[in-house]
Image (cartoon, rainbow, N blue to C red; front, top):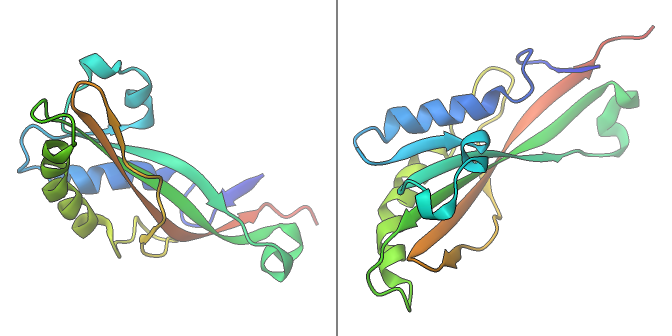
Length: 158
C-alpha cells in the first residue's frame, strides 16, 4: 500500500488549502471556503455565494524510470479551486458576474501560487483549468487548477 512520504493522509493538501484560503481571505466576510463534500450537498438555488470550493482533481503520474520499479513515485497532485459567485444584474452578458469574481480570483491566486501545502510537497503551480461556466440566475463558476509535486513510496515487500 502506498503512503505519501510527507504525511499518512494522501489528501492532506486539501484541508491545508482550505485553511490557507480561510486565513488569507477572512476579510471577505461573506466568502465561504468549502470542500467537495460541501459541494455535493448544495442545490444551486440554495448555494451560498460567494464561495470557494476545493476539490481533489487527481494526479499526473510519470512512467518509465520515474516509477522506480513501481514502489516509488514522484507525481503531481492536482487541486481544483472553484469560485462560485452570483450577481443577478445584467445577466445576459455575464459582466456583473465577472466583476464580482475578478477581485476574489486575484486574491485566491495570490494566496496559493507558489505556496507549499506542507512537508513533502512542492509549491503549488497553476496549470490549465476548465473554462468558466455561467448559469441561469446570475451564477458564475470560475475554476483555477494547481499542481504540487509529491513523492509516494510503497511499503517494501522484500
